Image 1 (cartoon, rainbow, N blue to C red):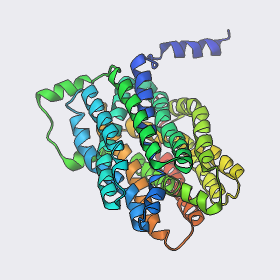
Image 2 (cartoon, helix red, strand yellow):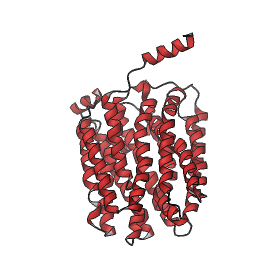
Image 3 (spheres, rainbow, N blue to C red):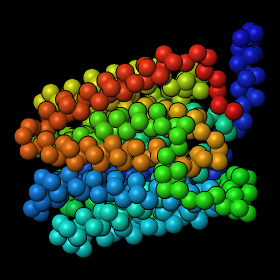
Amino acid sequence: MNSIESEETLMQSALPKLWTWPFIFLILGNLFTFMSFQMLLPNLPPYIESIGGSSLQIGLITTMFAFAAILIRPFIGHLLMTRARKKLVLIGSISLLIMTTLYPITQIVVVLLIIRFIHGLAWGWSTTVNGTAAVDLIPRRRVGEGMGYFGLSVTVGMIMAPSLGIYLYQNFTFQLLVWIAAALGAVALILLSVTSFVTPESVYQNQKQPPPFSFVGSLVESRSRYPALVTFLNTFGYGAVVTYLVIFGNEQGLSGTFLFYFFNAVLATISRPITGKYFDRKGPWKLIMVCSVLSFIAMWILSLASTNVHLIIAGAIFGIGFGSMMPALQAWVISKTTTERSGIANGMYYSCIDLGIGSSALILGFIYQFVDTATLFKLSSFLFIIVLILTYMDYRKQTDPWEPIH
């Protein structure tokens, strides 16, 4: 063994342990949570359209949950400063399961919008708490790698579940889709129930003298605003895919729209260990810049797709690009703040995701009256160019080399 190999082995052995059973169970529980929720996301717009919903209502079905999730997250962020993790995690998981089972009870669009809003409240609660619980379980020196693996549960859920949901919706019934989503939610609840969580010492100290609540202060972590803005723009671009991919496939006569999500998930999974370790060594900037270019290219391939092969190529490239950007952005957001306010930073990160997807659905829902879905993808692709520019601007400001987070 040469000196370089010896040094690398020594550095690896000195790293704190990442893979513990609680961390593994949390990743799996979060994966099933996201799969349960994301299975419904791309199928609700065509379902609303099939029962007579207007173009505005199609946009609102995505926007309502995003607004609700953003509304509740400041309260959850504040609770996380004074409350142990497990009870909050289980409340979120149970609430999501209950709301998932309510969709088949009516075909009245207004009632479905109300259900969607309440579902969004539960979603905002659960994602914020689960993400913060992950931060508490990950050693700070391995936050990029650890959140990369945790983020894999988010990305695979966001990418793999829609492909399964689309297949079920196109080949069976909406009711069956809902019940399978509920079954996945039940599995998530079981996994999270047997998970042991870590609560930071600062939380117990805050219980003695709770900090005052401020809606804005619990909504925004000022030190993490810049990467949060980049996250918002990134997911605004993704919102077009979530809302209109199935409709695009129907317009183009493509039977394999689920293939886009499938290969997206596969490539995101393969690339994640590499990109997570790269983040810890080099920081977020170059990684995000490269991935934003890949996402831009993928969106254009998707917009021009006329065969299932094109969908596979677009999905694979998007999986490397967008799939690698999301955990890098989350780790970047966390790296800017303290352990005590990591819950608020996490809430802001997830709020930016929901705000990006939700506002994208609303704005594109208006534009959709005048253009086809391929044009929506092309327009949305330029959000990734803005992400590239903003990340490069922040990179130019850096004067010191990136150091792993301690």
